Image (cartoon, rainbow, N blue to C red; front, side, top):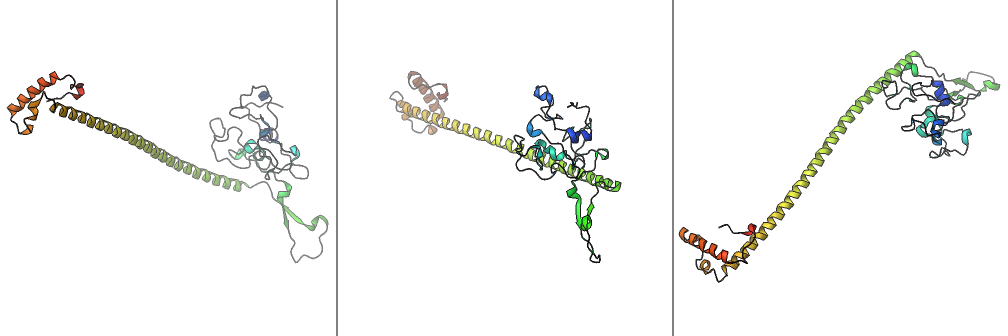
Length: 302
C-alpha cells in the first residue's frame, strides 16, 4: 500500500479503488499528521473503512449503492456478513455511497474552492465535481437500467427465447447541451443559495443585536434594582437615625437640668433674641451631659 501525500492528489480511479480501503500504517505507529482533523486518505478506525465497489461481469455491483444494511454497526464498523454483505454500509462520512461507482464525481458541488483548489466545505477529498473537467458519468447496476416494454397488439406469433421480453438500456452519457444546461441550473442554484445565506446572515446579525440589547437591558434593570434596594436601605437607616434623634431630644426635654426648653412652648412663636438665648443655654447643658452625646453623625446642628 502506497502512502499519498496531500499535495499529490490521487486520480479519480485511485479514489474509487483505494480511498479508505486500507488502514493507515502511520496511524498504527502514532505518526500520522492527518488524524485531527481527519483528512487522511486511509482509514484509522474500522468504522471509517469502506469496501471497494466492483461491477461484476454480469453487470451487477458487489454491494448496493442505495440500500443500506440494517445489520451494520456504525460504532464498531462491523457487519455480521462481512465484506460479502450485498448492502451499503453507513461508514463514517458515508464514504461507501459517496465514493461508489454510481455516485462519485457524477454531480457538481455547490461549494467553491480555495486558492489550493480544495473544496471550502468538504476539503481536498470532496466527492463532488468542481467543474466540467472533474465530472464523470455514473456507472449503473444492470438491474437498474433494464426497462421492460410490451409488444403492440398488431404483432402476431409467439416470441421465443431471449426475445420474449424487450429491454432498453439507459445510456450513462449526456449530450454537451444537457451538461451546459445542467451547469446553468447549478449556477442559478448556487446564486440562490448564496442569497439565502446572505439573508440568513442578516437575520442572524439582527437576532444577535436584539439579544445583546436584551442582555444590556437586563443588566440595567439589575443595576436599577440594586440602586433601589440601596436607596431603601439608606432611607431606613435615615428613619432609624431620625427616631433615635427624636428619642434623644425627648429625653433631653425631660431632663431636670433643662427646664428652660419646656417653659417656652412652641419655639416658632419665640422672638429671635430669645431663641439665641435658648441656643446658648442648650449648648452649655449638652456639654454637661456626657451620656447623651452621640457620634458625629448624630450630633445636633442648631
